Image (cartoon, rainbow, N blue to C red; front, side, top):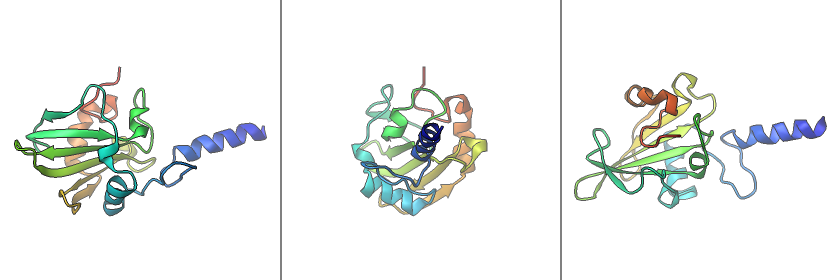
Length: 159
């Protein structure tokens, strides 16, 4: 019984943002500046992987256009079906036709943050990291909500 309790506790802590185990980075709270620091310094998003069906640069539409590239952390890439693992972060880098970064948008799955919208925290930044908007953003929720069955992820289809 004690072993079962410890196993359940370990599983809960592994899925809870803000908790880290040996070799893992502590996840940030749902706060724009702390998330930016995490995705650029602690665990740079440019070193993450990409969805297998959405690699490289793709044409896009506003507010992410005209082109974008999407990066996903290991928590997201190891999710095999919706809902995605808590701690998943997807970063979309919007680019001009010439490849210049227009903005950086992150969606971060935080347990209990916003259950009505899949527990996603949204943030949009300038290329230098100044938050333009963050939180339970109605525009993000409205657009991504069309893919609620796919846990609000538009650029990757779980099979």
